[in-house]
Length: 481
Image (cartoon, rainbow, N blue to C red; front, side, top):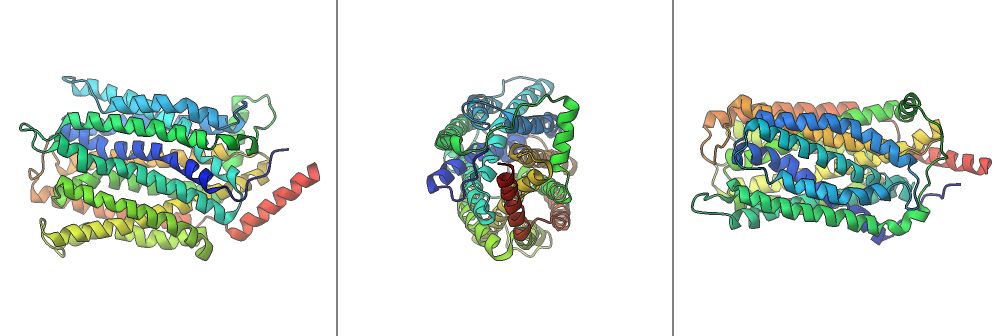
């Protein structure tokens, strides 16, 4: 019989488990916030080609996610189901992440397209091999409704802190260190990104290894793979469908896919707005990004509290409504001339405070949504008899990577449509181009996020239903023993 879930993991286990997502956060920050900016404005590549490379890589990603999830659910080894994947991913994802920031000089756009495509596929495939099995540990560590939000708060906190730390370091240390006479703004120096890539690859490798080693002692307490079965490809896909086929899963899947698309769209344009729309300096952008550390604390602390007081679905709807309306609000107010002029201290602090509070609420929403996915594991087990944490969280990993990546793709085409020229530096974009950028951004981001709230209202698993399912499963195991 599989060991029962641990109800209250230790603080060390939570820290080690959560710290692992620094790897994903570092990768995510680079590919969401910097990749499009780097290749289009620094390397000089057509933004549409960069977006196309990202899009093609996402298609490969869509195939790898369920494969890795299903494989890790059924994998047998002396190190359990999840940890072999985590260890195997560490070096390949770190090395490929470094090379995507050091493209060869003098290559044509078409050659660079192939370069970005191969490395993006490699990074995304190996981060899947780590992130899906690692995230799938959450429902194994505890079956408690509230404790899951607590565990995943650590994961959400470290994911945002890890990625944000690299962004802050880039703007406050790396870019200023690479200012030259020929390149007076370090954020347009390709050597700066090579150093950024090196630091990121080291952070990714260390985070994965620390998390895998820090949770290694839990392997004997985790669930084992089901007995070996003779499975055809048709039977595998049938089992996958039977496991996830529920109204609550499809509601959460659809809502999260759209939410991550909106997040990727916003992230892809984030530094364009900071640099060109608001006219902030590298130091100011670094200070604003520092606020995300506070936002991670706000979101990580708020999610368990909201779970206890409102429940996950109601909490997600409430927090999400405030966060999603607040995200485009400053840009909308600028479009209608209701904010101070650029270059004033007032506009800096307005954007800094608004960004910190809004990101904190978005982090809280993401933790709640991930915890809602964890609660679907028992629903699937009750229906099929199979414990499929990896499969459920492969869906979440897919939603996150594909949605955010597709959002960046949309951002690239929007930049081209409104006339943001490749290689343009700060101050070289016309007022009309910047106004058009904001006028497209506000309705798109708001429409996507409000659609999320409508769809997620169809999710049906609450505290009472989850706890009843856990009791029923426990009774079933006793009866069969």
